[in-house]
Length: 290
Ligand code: NAP
Picture 1 (cartoon, rainbow, N blue to C red):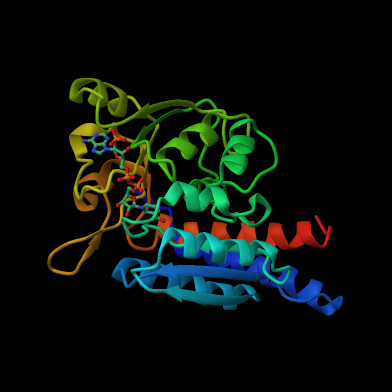
Picture 2: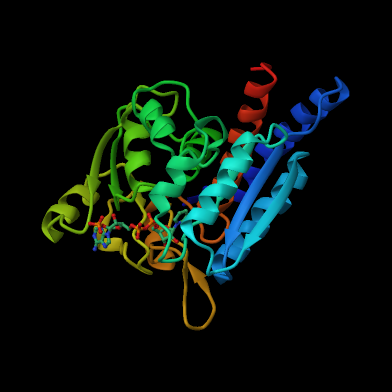
């Protein structure tokens, strides 16, 4: 069993980004700038935002965090996004999800200027990604690809099963790994809550790569996978005892795996690193450096 160490990979990518930024700054340009919008006091969101802001500093970026109360209206949030879209000193913006019930998250995502959409959730970026065109790729899926690339895990020609079809993880990673990308050309099966259990087991048991993003602790058990599988655990679940676990029963499944991601220290770190790559790209696009 080998660990796909997201921290090691992310640290290496961020060191490379910081070097590029230093060169641009030496050349007389300003630093890249990320704006993060956080609505309310959702504890996991606080922790994700903190990690993004800290990683901006490590990458040599400027960042600012805009906090809004839980009671903010959709209209007020959309107005703020318009201001950020028009602000030439911000290269990329993240609106941390989830949003309170009174706000339609898709309407908010759609309001972000595609050229600042470093999460890669805007329909323009998602569509361009799906068509294989240059785009900001959804950060978690992009981070998974970067992790597979870093450890030179073979993907092309492999059979990959994705469990979970959310717009932010399952759907984009299934498209990216099946596309003709550097890390792609796999044969991908996308499964979801309506996938019959027997069919799910048939698929996962013959998969070379299993990617799970369902948000259920211990969902993947050893009987579901073959020996030598590569297992990517996207889940982040907080147990009652405070422990953070993924969607895989790690202790039981890891001995069967050729490669496996830990939680924490796996995909979560890569999501933040991918956001930094997207922000650098947004900045380089602004200065026509790419
Ligand atoms: P989500 O929007 O809740 O989607 C979960 C998906 O799992 C849905 O598509 C659902 O199917 C599917 N599902 C639920 N039960 C299933 C079952 N029994 N069999 C097959 N599919 C099933 O979740 P998400 O946003 O993708 O997040 C999933 C997990 O990843 C969460 O723990 C989240 O915290 C974590 N996450 C981590 C990162 C990171 O950076 N590491 C980033 C994002 C999310 P339906 O569509 O049919 O309902």
